[in-house]
Length: 86
Length: 305
Ligand SMILES: Cc1ncc(C[n+]2csc(CCOP(=O)(O)OP(=O)(O)O)c2C)c(N)n1
Ligand code: SF4
Ligand code: SF4
Ligand code: SF4
Ligand SMILES: [Mg+2]
Image (cartoon, rainbow over all chains, first blue to last red; front, side):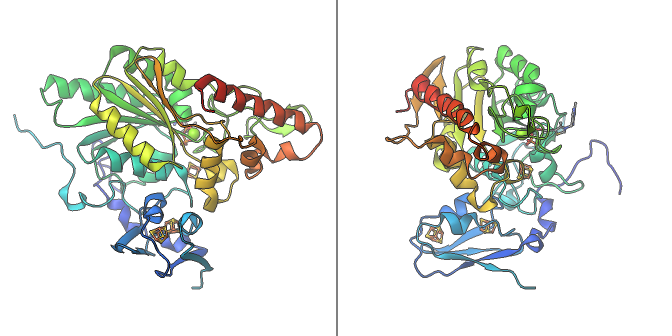
């Protein structure tokens, strides 16, 4: 690896790390009872939950580490954690 | 002289300013806190970070999670490096182009970086300093810091025959910051993201030094379930163990009230392995009582009831 002067790294390049491979449990966004409170998106430490439309949220499994915070905090219990199978 | 623009790359301007792919542990409160701070601050910022988990998990060289200009200082001098950036912007007459945010963990802020921070506050730099308080030196394997709470078990404050864990009280860091006569000091918690947003936004409208301390659960060091990161953070606030307030020009101007009847501290302690030793014997009840008294004193001191 080459170290340039000042050890400068390019913005946002950590996206190359597909941290989704860490997961033991996987959040399933049922998109049935969602009230659009956005808590799943706000509380996700990976910033990998996005809004599709007002009452429909989805997760990017490329980065989701499966912490389960979204499922725990969901206002309408519309997110379920299931065992990851690979 | 050629000048470069100070704004963040537009490519990601609509996305979160802390990119995914960072290597924080699952359910990390500090990663969440940093995401919320950046989201509230917007892209016209220059940030520094002391050595610690935040810096390590966002800068796995040659990668970076930062979508804004970022400098990793040393462990002890985030505030000094930020002071230099702010002074340079002023000297160039470009202070209106970007806000400066200095960051550090509790160890980097309240212990080893305290002198640099005090200098920054004393000199009156126009900087927002954010302390991510996970209550120990997590990046090096959970050693106690000045912000580790009373009776908490860490690797350097173990529980055993002669010890209940950390024998010192949590340092009143917001009080120390406020004693410098700065315009704005506040505490916050990852459990209340809107409050973090409001406080960051408000702080950035104030000229001069600002200090914000955010309670950020660490599932690894607290030995708590990652899924419960928000629950744990909420209970710290609801029990009165982590008072949430704003101090403007030396006066407490706003607090988050706790519910009545008050939530007993056991509710908070029992879901964390770092306090598990307090539930193993009859004598430990007295220790829990001491912790309840700390919460009661906070409630009294800040008028949280
Ligand atoms: C001068 C110096 N001493 C010690 C270290 C080793 N070190 C790196 S990070 C760290 C702990 C950081 O703790 P804290 O500031 O609370 O941040 P956290 O990792 O908990 O977020 C230590 C001791 C260092 N990098 N530099
Ligand atoms: S499980 Fe955790 S990482 Fe995955 S989407 Fe939910 S909050 Fe984000
Ligand atoms: S937390 Fe639940 S209810 Fe709220 S937006 Fe997400 S999926 Fe919908
Ligand atoms: S050790 Fe704690 S603070 Fe550090 S990355 Fe892991 S959960 Fe976050
Ligand atoms: Mg720490």
